[in-house]
Image 1 (cartoon, rainbow, N blue to C red):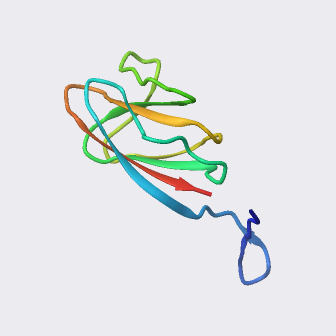
Image 2 (cartoon, rainbow, N blue to C red):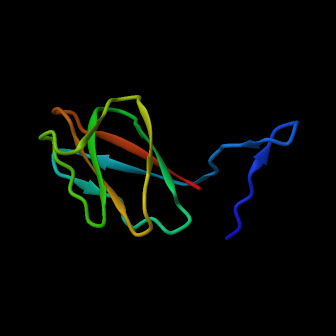
Length: 107
């Protein structure tokens, strides 16, 4: 795969990410993973907690936990995280409210 940079009007490269596949994970009191591992073309994920706070974890077979060992993402917040090919993401609710985590793959 060849990556092409965008350039500004005077020829300087612009650091930007290209959105790819998007998906939602519905999370509750049990850790929920996305269905398939991310491929080699995905370098970054943009995460957004749509409807409630959640904790998330990234890895080959991650299990998110609401005990402080996973990363907290507040409702409405966005975060960009780097991933490796073959990894997945898991999410679990932070406090009594089920919700949805939106994931956008970026390259």
